[in-house]
Amino acid sequence: MRVLMVIAPTPGTDLPTVWAKRQIDSLNALGVIVDTYVFHNRRSFLGLIRGGLELRRKARDFDADLVHVHFGAAQAVAGVLCAGKPVILSFCGSDLLGNYDEKGRRTWSGILSGVLSRLGALGCRRAIAKSEELKQALWLTLLRQKCAVIPNGVDLDVFRPIPQGEARSLLGWDHADPVVLFMDRKGAWVKDPELAHAAYREAQKTVPTLRMYVLEHEPAERMPLFFCAADALLLTSRHEGSNNTVKEALACNLPVVATACGDTSERLQGVHLSYVCSRDACELGERLATIVTARERSNGRQNVHDLAIDRIALRIKMLYEAALVGRQDRGTLKVHCE
Image (cartoon, rainbow, N blue to C red; front, side, top):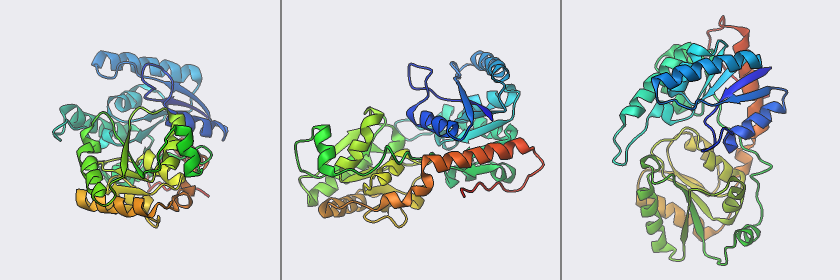
């Protein structure tokens, strides 16, 4: 099977992001031959036309069986209209849920992105949503019926528990204070850093030595060390698709305190010393204090085995195969991992 994957690349390059590279490698291991394509100008009508024609040429020259477009919006519509091959669309979060400015107002570009994503879904052969919330954001029952919920997988060989002292030594942390991690994105409203910092201050009332480490531009290869060195991960997002950081933290047995966004409630169900909270700084801070006082690891790793990257790759391959069967099956698509 030959799949042309339309990706959002690592900034400044045409190379896949780390998570996309891991997905490609896992599909390669199952015998799926993957090549990639990047829309270089998705923000102009002319750029989308040129990009769509180039995508069609590449799909033809590569002899692709399918075109898999990651992220919706304009490139989803261009892919469906121009690929000349059956198209799979992956919806990741803001493409359906929208973008917001620093004051929490939905942007016009975010509204347009949502409309275009849903229009693209009308013409795709199959779709993937990273969470049930995203799937339900599609307009029509027909669209939801051809959409499978498949989160990004976790490389359990990369994200694995190591002793906290060893991780701290490798990071150069020369203190024994408890640490909470927070993943920010340039102060993005959707991540709600103000709530995160307020929760941290509340936790400090009980645990004055608590430190907060904000992750923003750390190299991917160092992330497992942070998850093993810290005592908790804090997620205060207003919405998410399926947050990769939460799954990776669980794979390292790092306790998590999170708001009910995306699939966090599902991910944290049954996980020791991990909590889903309301959007209240006092409650979040209290739960953080409980975790860092205990100084224990969670049992999160046993809850993410079904999300191992090889098992997710198998589910994606099964969806590809279902897409190539044709359009005759309009029933609800169920993709299982045997």
